[in-house]
Amino acid sequence: MKIEQHWLSEARHVPSPNFNERPAGIVPELIVVHCISLPPGQFGGAYVEQFFQNCLCAEEHPYFGEIHNMEVSSHVFIRRDGEVIQFVPFDKRAWHAGQSCYGERENCNDFSIGIELEGTDDSRYEAVQYERLKQVIETLVSYYPSLELDALVGHSDIAPGRKSDPGPFFDWEKLRKALGLS
Image (tube, rainbow, N blue to C red):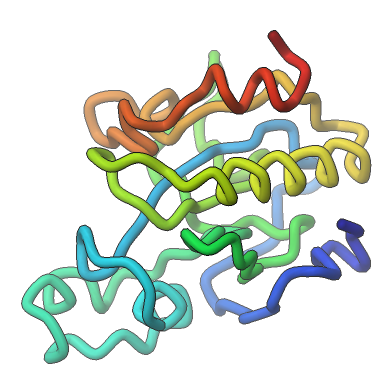
């Protein structure tokens, strides 16, 4: 994989309006792993893309009525079949973490890159998702000197009590081994 002008060249680009500039002088220093499926527990389809583009139809599912007005995005979404979709360029501030804290630093969106995996907190992820996630992380670390392989957390780590993703079925050890961290 390569990054060109802050976009993964091998990803499908689906620009989201839900981003803004990072604060002056702030660069990506953290990677946050999330999970999402829309409707919850259902995989495939275009609903996640629609959600991140603010065009999710509230009438298509009861859950959508609760979330369709939210302005949310992620830098990258990795589907269960391994397809990689990018919504926000990496030099911009995607709206993925919400109220969050890493160490003593709040507002993780300011200094992080958000990667969503198609999944749920209570289901296993696909082997191809781990492989794509590894490729994306290695590409990011090679392109952005401010990122290190061990600056990798789950949404639950930066928003404990509020978020639980990517959940107990996410195999951190498998990812760390693939990245050469253990």
